[in-house]
Structures are given as C-alpha cells and as structure tokens.
Image (tube, rainbow, N blue to C red; front, side, top):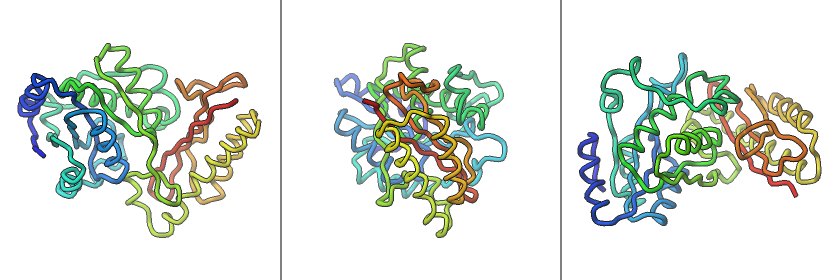
Length: 283
C-alpha cells in the first residue's frame, strides 16, 4: 500500500491507474478505523481495481464545543489495518493541504433543505463542512465510485444530492451499517463510552427495531411512535436529540402513503453522541 499526504502525489498515482484503464474507488474516512470502515474497503475491492482510502479529521464539520481536538487519531494502527484489507493507497493530508487559504475564506458547498433538518438543526454548518470536504476529495481523486456507510443516512443523502446537483461523475454507494453482536452500530465514537454506558448503548438499536416491527405490523401513527421512541430512550438513560420517522428517499416528512421509511435517532449517552437508523419498506 502506498501512502501519500500531498495532492500532487495522489494525483500522479491515480492518473497512472486511470491511464492503465483501472476502475478506482474512494473510501473517505476520519480514521480511528473499525470493522465498519474495513467493510467499506472490502466492498470497494469487489467493485474496483484500485482502492484509495483517505484519512482526514475535517475541522470544518465540527462545531463549537464538539470533539475535534479530542477526536481519536490512530493513523499507524489504521494503516496496518488497511494494509491487511488490501487498500492500494492511503491519503493522509494535513489540514493546510486541504484548506491552504484557511477555513474562514474557503469556498463552501451547501445542500439546501436536507442539510437543515435533524442533525442539521442541532449542528449548524456541519453538513456544509461535510459536503465541502467530500467535494474536494472527489475532485482530488476523481474516482469512479465512492463508498459511505448507511449509519449516517442524512450525510449519505446530502452527498448524493451534492453529487447530482453539481454533476460530479461519480457513483455514490451506501453500504449497510455494520453492527456489534449486540446490535450497536460500529462507530469511532463508541470508544468514548464507559463500560456501563457500553452496556446501555444497544438499547438504541433495540428501540429502532421495535418501532420497525410496529410499522411492519401496520401502525402508521408516526407522531405517536416518535413520541414513544423518545420516551423510551430517556427511560433507557439517553438524552435524545430526535427520534424521527421520515421518507427514506429524501428525509421529508412521512405520511400514510410513504412506502420507503427511515427511522432515525440521535441521542447522547454520557458525553457520547450516538446516531443510528433503520430502513423499513411498507407493504
């Protein structure tokens, strides 16, 4: 596996692959890799001839008081895992390589509407930071496809909309959420959980599953289901930000005619903010 930190080096290698007719995949990450990230790499290997993985803790998507300074950085350990997963190139740019003029004068990509609901309400500017850095990475690598996990469904849909609106010639692929044996969605932030919180954390997935089962059995009183879900999260020791049933296509409000649904939740457990979702298709 080749390791580069400069855009010029990255482009030299990717250009050589492209001239050789290779199909290229990109897996963007913020590092501190877990089995969910490695599944993205595995899926990329199945779909492409060459796999580029980026590790960049993007300061633009962290708000005031969030955990940018303390976000776990485990680059050497990550590189070892990526070697075993047979990634072809690891791109680890410093902040000044991505934002050479500084963040305050950086051109921003904003995706209206979908960026301003759910997590967008609670983390203003977050999705502009995500869309901007992903757009830059896509322009740097110019891959044929890029893979993202479904765990952050809102992020995935923001990126898909951005790519469509800006006519970026790349296929965006969402990969199902990888879970621990007890159902907890794999996340770099799970490492923040204390032992007691870790034992509580799977309740989030259990509640999503209960709501999914209720919908499958015919319930369509979504406001009531949302209220019940939020109350159950609180009773399980969480501080819920939202528990919402939405149209899975664009996260608009669901109604009785909506067939593809997403049940989305965000909640804090101690100092750790967890997000998760389940997709449900009504008969």
